[in-house]
Image 1 (spheres, rainbow, N blue to C red):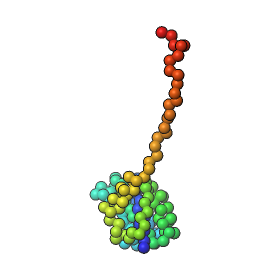
Image 2 (cartoon, rainbow, N blue to C red):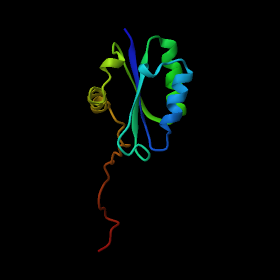
Image 3 (tube, rainbow, N blue to C red):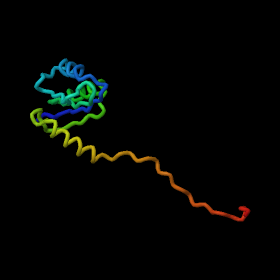
Image 4 (cartoon, one colour):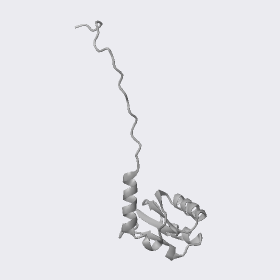
Length: 121
């Protein structure tokens, strides 16, 4: 079964350029989806591509990276018919919640002697 490679793109990324590059790789327009909001000129968007072999996964991932994808997700055993925006969004939200985010550096205070006889009143 095929897999879906989905990418979340920022406002600076041109979805038309992404579409052209995916099609130049040999994908048909029925094998990928670009999810746009009503104001698609100044908003983030999501794109998904149906992948049928590992070699294509690496090539599409490279195209996503060249087009400034913020995050890239691989969903195995999924076809493009199952890749509705709502379904992908739920899966991405679940993965995001499950990620362990890096914590800030922890500073450990060392014990000190406190006030000593050198302190004058």
